[in-house]
Image 1 (cartoon, rainbow, N blue to C red):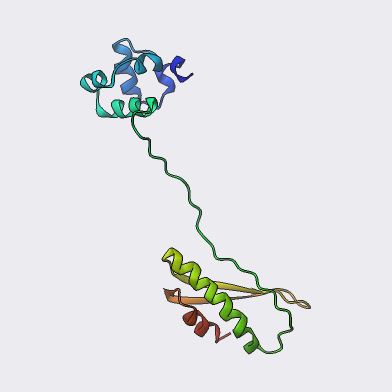
Image 2 (cartoon, rainbow, N blue to C red):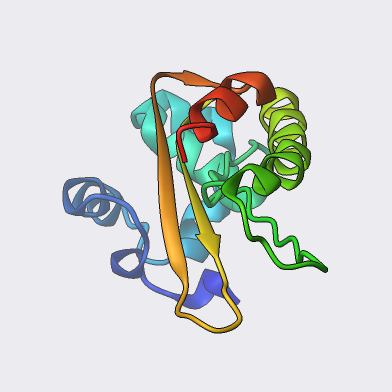
Length: 147
């Protein structure tokens, strides 16, 4: 299907297309009809690589997009919090989950954002910062003690 298109529709540089047209190669089909060794003798390596990728003789590296990973957990407490110290036990559980998440990816976190959804009031957000970056639950637990 691609073979019927002119070389100007390819990803080849204009200079390369002009060289090919001067020797009578007008379409992609004309280009693909030439053996790779002949192309290598008469043209540069970029054209050989391009033709090899088109025919599937050479591997074409593909760079996939990998979105940044985020650790996001939700923990609903089944009791009212009347004292900030009562948050330490649920936070310990979340920090341990974070530690596993970070350890598996060989990463550290520099900032954590904790959002408390309150029944009778608006949401409250608290951020914890680590200057050197940490993955250990106990380090984040110590930082959260200043809540």
